[in-house]
Image (tube, rainbow, N blue to C red):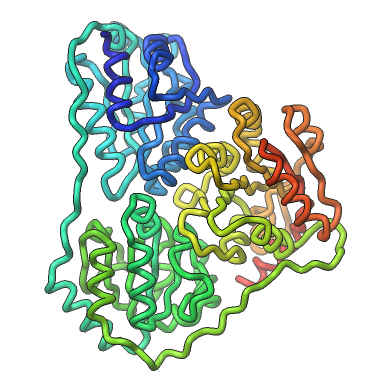
Length: 541
């Protein structure tokens, strides 16, 4: 057995089912070992960025590290955006790259870059296998660090000469890590702060959804705590579904990266004297945006200690497994009857027969109506992400996937492919603007080849909507935001998949249902009213 074969055995040992990537000359030994694997399916993508995004979303939804593979040089640099996205959004991912032989590593050489250092800032750990015998330890550490709270990306480089070396070793045993129990003193102090507070608010973050995906009942515990305490609760964009969207104490989602925007929309948070941050990550929504005066006390509830910030200095930290901490809080908190429950109505899409372009309210409402509660939407980045986050209610966590920390365009299509591989029995939609969709449109061929029945909803307005709205707001003019587009229906058919146009609002819902029921990849081109972006920007300003 050579090192490449041992590495693949280590991947199998970690439970890896898919490796996403593009082979290269420097990964030939690894490619051959993957070809012989009976447990791992190699998914050939059309661009390494698509491979990294697939691994990113696979890790988010499965809680096990998604694995992506590229060769040296341009293959590795193409992975970077997706790896960085996973890192900032706390998705477990292991990137593997090939490299030239060690005999070239000390000098200038064809396609040679210091990939280990290049991946350093966007991973929790980046290393090179230089000693064959270290392979089992390196792989075990990479997967363990990728999955440990807070999860993220790791990177392994394997030079081609090391990959070909003979070795006689076995993978290390996989042992799961448990998290400590929050200290009783911290629980008692938190309950005292809650009792003394006149206007507490819960801010739930991605950690709650993440622990739910890992099999822990954090969502159930959070909802029990909200019901018993009667405390209003909001959530970040990445935590959609952790709260009952129709619950009497559930507030709208928050996450706009603009001062005052969400505080105006959520007055309960604006007037709060205590924020109970549960599974919240500072990268999701900067604390300066919800605690601008630094006058709100904070209780930090998470599986790791708080990342300190001038606007986020917890009075007490409950560090432990989330469901256990929340269970103790729910059991011991005093019930509050002084809070008037909100009246939350279920909105339906407007059905009148308006012509194109269609408003965001029409589009998001029809999408919600067309999908079941546990179906999945993977959103690209753009104005539509904000509309989706604000207007799309979901009672099930991890059914709305967004790129938030890095906010990277191009994630929706490859991410939807990965989501369908994780949950083949659910409907999956890639929700994209025309700008982001064309950044990784080549992965339509991957979806067709794999037979992943995803539906790409492409919102067509021939512009970069968020940038244009902000330019108008700040400068009263626009620059470099408009572009031309192909015929998206014809483009879909050129890839061998079904394409649909939506000329009026009334035809949107039945067209979505038709595409979703095909059982194969499809594209729905929706004319999008970009003027709504400007109206929203003006309102937020």
